[in-house]
Image (cartoon, rainbow over all chains, first blue to last red; front, side):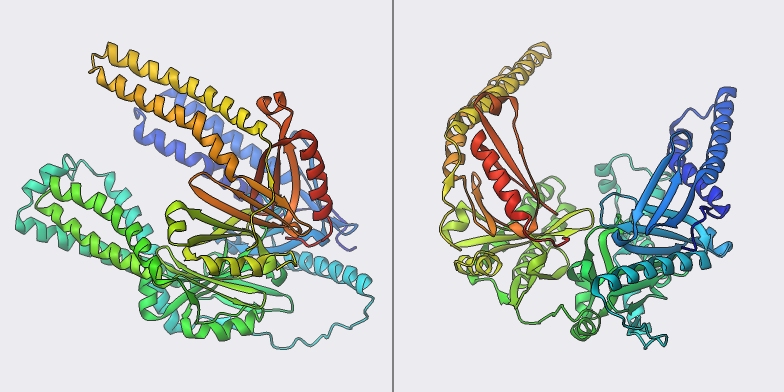
Length: 481
Length: 159
């Protein structure tokens, strides 16, 4: 083994660990600054400087004590300031290696490597925060070599690895799709809430005193002014979210290697994730209402194990692609999954229940609002047709389909969602029947998959009873059908 | 799907559930009393206390006398060679299939009440979900646990 020597990571690791500690302290400090009494007395300054020195020393020692090496088919890490901690990870157990590079890493031409096993946990099992790119490649190669050796021993095959690499299928975002993705992203909500939070800091300037009072002083002219202001704010938020999405997906690439998908993205924050195809639990196809109008969808991978990423356990496979293209893309990148347009629908008698479920809450909101906040409160009556629509489409988009060992589920919460799962990935199968459902011989259907550290469940409400027993027979492992 | 799962849980479960309902009713009674005392000192109208007490009474009676009966009537389980079949629920009846190949591990555990009546509950965990069979005879629970874990060991898939 050439990586026998224990190594330290790059000294930049000190800065990173320093920043990480500061990050965890920054919120209390800001809160203290905003809500404290703003008296910078001597004690506060002494305390803060002591804390600062302690953090600096800790991050230097942390870096000094952290060493890693590969030995006996294990990745070994030794770290810990007062308590020596050793972590040995058998290479066979390594599920994925993610390399990312944040801004700091890029300045110094370094990468961050996260090594994950199937075990749960919020953090990856091993994180090397700053190492040289070549070093990361060496680790990857060493691990790949070892895995190959092991599998050779197992299979007793002497297949020579071809040095010439065949052209692997590669997916990149089309400029047109990229623009659609950007202009229809739901990130707008995040930005609006950020702006709202920002403005709430300035409530001295804007009298938020009494909503009711404000309704009374709203003359027509100021109402237009408000509307224009709101519109401008929305527009700015939209532009910002467009820029955000463009940055996020501009270099989005998916490469299909032999038995894994390599997904990389980002300009400032380069991320690369490799997902072994055997770890994929399900495929989720999501269309938010806006994208549905334009005929676009996002495709996610649900995979087991790994650490909690930015979007939970789902990894984006295709950020925004035309719905029509999904079938061919799937057959190219994940031939085991098949998305069909036709699904078994729910019976007509479920419509009523779907409508009620959405309209009743709307009524509960509208009636008091209309009553107490007249005349503007009557605006809330718009909710009723909206919720009726919502209920109807939730009914229309619900359905299921079985193809061999794969089940396809369709439902709508807000976005229209289609899920593709293989039978051996379903952890459990549940039917629920309430008293009212029994009278109409309808049942609710719920399945669980393993996704990330915990599970994830998908529910279709009010299926035909007979359909559900058909699904049960398909799922059942007992042969007495 | 097939007919209902065959086995019912122990009849002693009724007693245990009733006891735990009585205990929680007593705890709630303390809350009711404190509401009454608070209403008295804050000179709020006495009917608040009356309403709260009525709600407590009705709820407790149902929880002690009705709920355990229904739960016991609905609860059924059966362990087949390849899967576990459960049915439970109060107003919403749930039917669950857990394939043996998905079972990660099985535990039995007992609270103080269950121990007093020689009962135990079984918890079956898959990679994503947990399922409980409450209040079985302790001997039966141990046998069943070992039986399930033997059946579950047959396959060796990851997740």
